[in-house]
Image: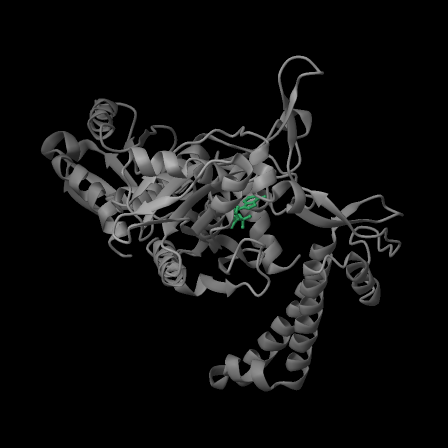
Length: 513
Ligand code: GAP
């Protein structure tokens, strides 16, 4: 098992053991790529959602929120292009009867070559020590350059074939590269076919009159169809945005990597409506703003990178991903898309209703252009959770497992312990808890030795532990211990609220943007 695989395995088991994520319907052996958020997970997820909402809606007077329904009129998905074009290329292995995404098989093949590059880099770094220059090595080492050229050629050919819908060539590429079924090694493949990712359902009681519907595959369309309602009732002036968080559903063929790719997931999307011709400026601005939001959480600038798309979706004139370094490598976390006027124009055409904006300054109507920011809440959860989970070697030779969640996102901000379960200490601890719970989510624990309780809270991600001891009874002071530094200091009970507040105030975090 590689170091990366080992770290990912730890993430999965920690998420279960500490009440963050459970497999859905586990007692029935689960449902593939569907997960439940447990008692701590639901708090972390809510805090991420709130942090996004505050940054996007509360801090922008020209952005408002909505909560559109999951079920929408089926014509929505005709207009948006999802009925005809929301497909993945799939391929079956005739021997194993397993189904794969053809593009993922090819990308995995390239990832293996990238693994070889990384090995060469590690070897050279060891050989050259402090004098090693990674950029120079990547650009000049013959073997590495060869590997990179091979990756580029394969991905360029795959991209071009998918764009032309040349699925015969995608299969030919798989055969030329001698890609085998990862499970069985068989190279007996079917042709590549397109597979629509939307989940269908029915509305209505009788089979004859029931209407075919889809579970929404993105939240964005709920915003587009409400564009004029919001603009008129909110008297919004362009440029303005509409934000929304909510569930989306995709019948993913390759559902793996835990909550990275799910069949039921949650999106946090914002459509920003702008004057035609200004979309490039806003696209650049939103790319920068969204990256700053991520960086404000302090999870390491080196863990993010932009990936500008060469191959654009039918509705876009520019698109980029913010990629994050997950335990399995850099992968898409958020998309920023300049969607032109495609969606509003399409809904206008299919509904027969005008969806235009009257610009008083210009004294004319036009269809606004849209710049969208779209992030998966579950993916953000995985980014935060996996980045925070650390094993730390301590001075006394032991190790501790600590979940260094950004304090603003932690499920519980503080845990309160009486040192012992007697002498009136639990009563004082309960009183502190009762005062603090008006402001923060706090946790009470009196079981086991205090050192063990500290470790439990370290692993659960709680930024502060507050211990009430016999001295407290004399001078109203308690010990407050910081999760990350393990530093302990003595403070007055009356100082606790301010102290915790300074670490978890949304202003202090968002001001880093
Ligand atoms: N409205 C644009 C849109 O939906 P997308 O790139 O398909 O664009 C946006 O999705 C984000 O939603 C992705 O960057 C990712 O974070 C998240 N996402 C997409 N599919 C997902 C899945 N199957 N499971 C979890 N998150 C997903």
